Image 1 (cartoon, rainbow, N blue to C red):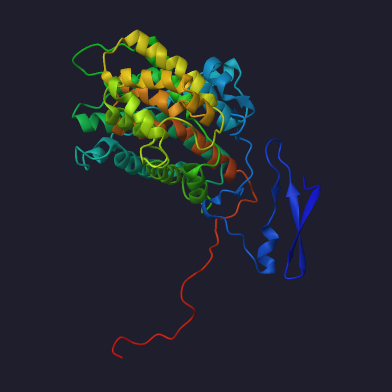
Image 2 (cartoon, rainbow, N blue to C red):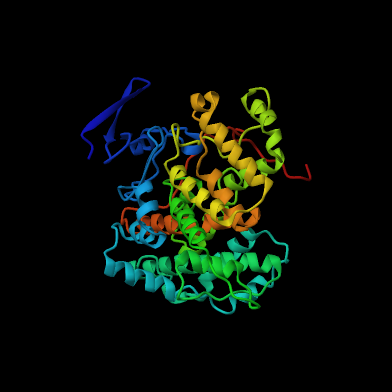
Length: 426
């Protein structure tokens, strides 16, 4: 794997560092021998550090490429459903028809949560943030499955993964129902993964509820397009927590907590907040000018992407579903009018083209969730639901590696030198 070596010269001493090449992407310099020579690297935010080997997801931001197990995200979003992608991420290969049916049946049979979990919710205030409830209840799941918490056993890891993928939609829907004061809705085995989630969110005992095919398809695509995104903050959090041998439910709860941060999981919510700030179509020119003014703190949320420097490959597919949903539901909402006009301008304005500020997946998914009727404080919960399969796949991959070590980042210490302590009475 290491065909080349880099030579680092420090104070006249040469240190050999192997260079490794992956199947895609940049080569990496193996710096593990630096510690033995008295040095560490300094890389705040780990922006130039590969913390692990992984065969799950590859991103080339400059080229606008996102691959899951080698398959382009655009093809998966158009030709596969979310559970096919879940099987692929977790097990490494696209399922055969028989494998898919077995996997789907397994997930379907695990969608119910223990009845005592209902009591957990009644310990929260009814206006608690959904992410606070989700973080707590996901972590609490470990108290119900004592027999499957040996992280060294592959079969137990897979069963835990199945439970998490299956039960997360139920827990997210329960967070919403508790907030709005409606009774919890039990999962239905006759519905698809996406339709079952929508039914648990919006059905009530008083009347029949049917799921629009366009909305069901859009929901499934939102799940698929957010399923994994390589070594981001929350995935790295799950891996770091898991490196200590913590149980999978605790690790996924840690991922939920990391995702809760507005710099990570709140992008589509921030997009909706921006649309509310703009308010109406006639005010768009004013905000466009502000966005072009470097001295103005206003920024257009949902345009451009930190990783994708050209275009977000997920946005093209999500745009199709966005327009399908809006056409079918025919909702009259001034914020959706603002969103569509902003999209038109961004795709045609020379400034946006030059800066490559195209609508990203968060822009379109935020609009779809708004159109469906999901409140903005639930957006990050749905992101967590989608990302659970990515988190648990990375955790399973890491725990399958016999060479895995507990994470132990280093630091550049800038505090006081050693000094003598004086007792308080002196």
